[in-house]
Amino acid sequence: MKEKERIQSQISKLEEKYRDSGQDLSSYLDGLLYQRYLTYWDYIHLDTLLSLQVPRTHFPDEEIFIMYHQITELYFKLILHEQKQLVDDKSQNLDFFIEKVRRINSYYTALISSFGIMIKGMEREQFLQYRMALLPASGFQSAQYRMIEIYATPMENLVHYSRKDDFSAENTIEELYEHIYWKNGATDKTTGEKTLTLKQFEYRYTPRLIRIARQVEGGTIYHKYLGLSEEQKQNGALIKALKALDVNANVNWPLMHMGSAHRYLGKESGNLDATGGTNWRKYLPPSFQKVIFFPKIYSDQELNDWGKQWVDHIFNPDKTK
Image (tube, rainbow, N blue to C red):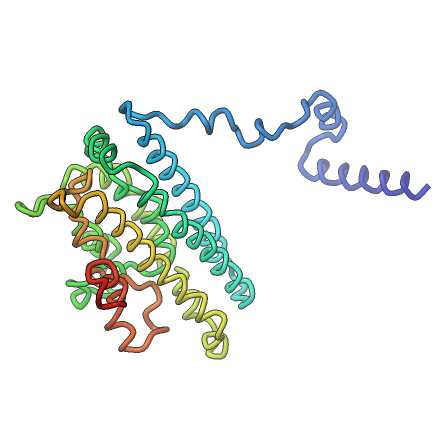
């Protein structure tokens, strides 16, 4: 009897749900009868997913290169998924804030720990050959990575380090975007002109990035932190999580790319350019960029020393022993 009552209660709730939407429950039940059973491979579109790797050369390791970057973009999507929820939340609930930042850090941790696939998981000789078939494409053109930055912190914190004193929140989004730090990494080292890689990226994504920057103006994750009560802002778990996010996004992640670039493009090869012509030696080191999402949670000394020890570890390993 209890089972019948439970089923009747569920039917009543379904009738109410579909009545409120102007639909008929009976029609939905007919659809349920005709519907195929769901399978794992259909649910995640497995066949489509496994068909998305299309190498441009015959070198086997190029497929590793493609898959790793596709996996990376999926992790970026996970990060953005959490960021959007945090930015859209109006409650300023501290536990919710900490949990979302914790999740973001878990995605970064997975990304950073997996980067050994890029550093040691491919033959250098193969990479140096198939990379020439990828011109002018570059990981520099990851729009999701730029979106992550825009959701995290106001645009004035993303202005190139050499020009930060010239700009503030009083400048327009367009003015700040024009001097965003990563554009310096995609200019021709000889002429100072924008590379084709940057021109392609700006043509495709600038309107979208500007639109997102306007949407979150005054409401980035950093703004959400600044809007907390003084007691909440001093919460140890929150500060620890935000610092970990800053280091993951702006030190550890670029540093992993630095290690990869150093292995494949540096050494005896004579410091080759990246595939998009990006100046990786100036663009990747954290201490050169000093991109910091949440500057007010650090001391002056921490800000001054930002990223130095990690860059020393790559270029001057004897100093860090």
